Image (tube, rainbow, N blue to C red; front, side, top):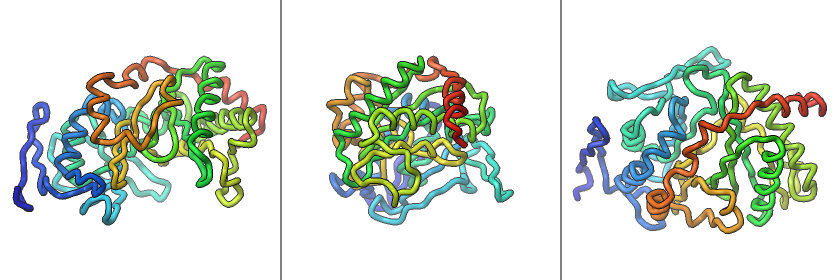
Length: 308
C-alpha cells in the first residue's frame, strides 16, 4: 500500500475516508492507523455507549504515539455535515463546539483526524452543567504496586455496596483502575466533586496506610494509591471505556467485572486482544444506564466531614 494511499470504509450509513492507513501509530507491534480504526469499529457498541451525547476532547497524535500529542477540544472546520457537536462554555468566556459521538462513524472520523484517545465529559449535551456520571479514579503513585490497586478496588466495591450504588470497573489503560457510577443529573460539578471526595475519604479511612486523598503530589507517600476525586471537577476528563491510550503498546481502557479485579493484567488489554474479548463477552458496561444512584447520602457525608 502506498504511503499516501487512502481507503474508504462503510460505517453504518456513512462512508469514512482514511488517509495514510499504513502509517505506524504503535511501534511496539507495528499497528497502523487503519488497525486503530478497525479496532474501534470492532468495539463500536461499547465505545459509542461510553461517549454518547457527551462533549469529547480528542487526544490526537498526527504522526503516531511516538510524536507530538495534541489536545483538541474544537471540531475543526471541514468536518462532515453529519458529524454532531455540542457547544460548551469556559470561565474565560470562550466556547468550543466539541465532538459529540452518536454513532460509530463519528469515532472513525475522529481516528481519521489522528485521534487515539477519547476523553469525554461526565455530563451530556442535554445539560452539560449537571453530570450523570461519577468517576472513581484509582491512581497509584510511582512505588505503589498493582496489588494495592486491586485491594483499593475491593474497598471501593465494598463501600459502593453499602451505599446501594452499582460500580462499573475498567482498567485505565495505564497503571490504575477506574470505576464509574451513573448518577441522577441533579447536581452541578462542585457538588459531584464534594460527593466524590466524601467517598474517597471513607475508602481512605479503611486503609490509611495504603490509600490517600492528599491533593498535592509532593505531599503523598510514593507507595500509596491516590483516589483522584478531582476527576469529577468541571472540564476534567479521563479516557473513556474502550479508549486506546497513546502508548507504543496500544493498551486499552477495558471494562472488567468485579470478579476479574484480582486477575486482570492491564498491560495485556490492547487493540490486539480486546476485540476478541468484546466479541466473546460483549460490552460489560451495557447496563450502566439502568443503574442510577442518588448522591444524597454522600453529600450528607460531605456535610458531616465539613468538605468543600
